[in-house]
Image (cartoon, rainbow, N blue to C red; front, side):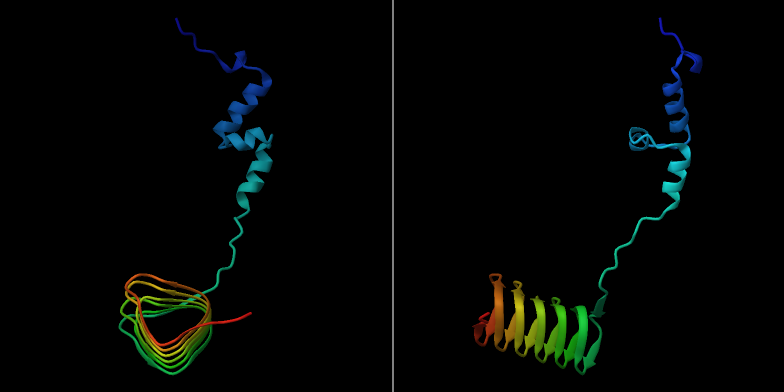
Length: 155
C-alpha cells in the first residue's frame, strides 16, 4: 500500500533540500536559498547584544547616608538619608528615604520624607510622601498618601 521512495526518486532540488535539513538548516534558510556555507557563516556570528543602562540597587538591609548623583536607574529597597539625582528612581515597598529627589521619572512604593522634582511621578498604593511634589505628569494609586503640595510644572 505504501511505498518507500529512495533519494533516487527525488528531484535534484528536493534532494538538496533534504540534505540541507539533515545538516541543520531551518525552513527559513531554505526559503532564503542559503547554501551550507552561508548557513555555517551565519551561525558563527553571535547576535548583537544591545547595551542596557545599568541598574543600581540599594538592598533592603542596607543603610546609607550621603547624596547619590549621576545614576541612570536606581532602585532603593533599604534606608537612605541624602539627596538623590538620577534619571529613573524607584523607591520600593519598605524603603525609607529622607532627602530630596530630582529625576526624569520617579516611582514610589515606599516612604519618602523630602521634596520631589520630576517629569513623571508615579505613587503606588503603599507610597507615603511627606514633602512637595513638582511634576509634569502625576499618577497616584488609591491608598497612596501625600502630605505636602502638588505643583504642576509649566513648560
